[in-house]
Length: 303
Image 1 (cartoon, helix red, strand yellow):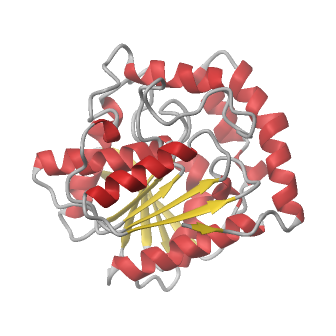
Image 2: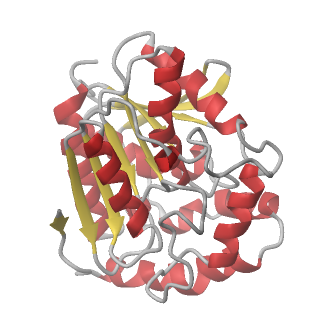
Image 3: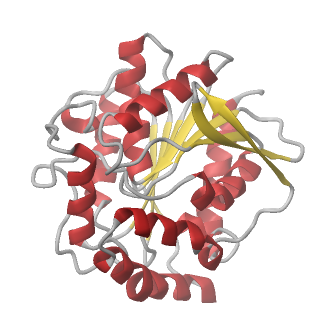
């Protein structure tokens, strides 16, 4: 495990405060996930910096609306990125800048599917969309897969779904503070944790309930760590020290290693959950993105 330096610049001091005193109360007290989704998408510019030299387009992958991001001079592989947001918020739009920075660092083209979200579309809508997008993209060659938080859960789950569908596993996985288990009592999500900067317990519980809609959280197609993972590719996991999903990140690493994966782990102190979204405005985010880029570049192969 690699422990990175603590906060060292103005951005590294600002964004944890923004997460604790602006984003956390907004997540906790906005009653509608639909309204929260709109707020999240509309305020992207506050925390993200546009990445220059990346062409943006739209396409469909297996009938799933998808954003494409192609950096100038990209020569690397292909990345399917699954956004986070507790299965209820987030979109390609909310994550386009962060993923543009990652794609540019990796020298690869990225696809961001707008998979269906709860509560309007509970489980298994999101996994069905992710599998459809992955199947369409992997038909053309090897695909790396990355995701943050709930997107990390979907990326891990894809190992189960792809094996069941007879599809090849991803060429590599990059997981940013992944959720591993949706049984909040048996899983790694740590409630009432004072060191968690961003995620309020109330919101975490509500989003999981909305997503599962009564489905058994011990189903491995909902909770990837509920059963042994199939053969797994090289993986990089990043998480913030002290965050509620730290144990899920470590449990994911253990399960991936048991499935034969070479796993590298990086932990960053003093940062909020998925701080990488502040790439270009935070030195810690820039370091994390550079590391993600180097990892993906090493495992992506030619496009």
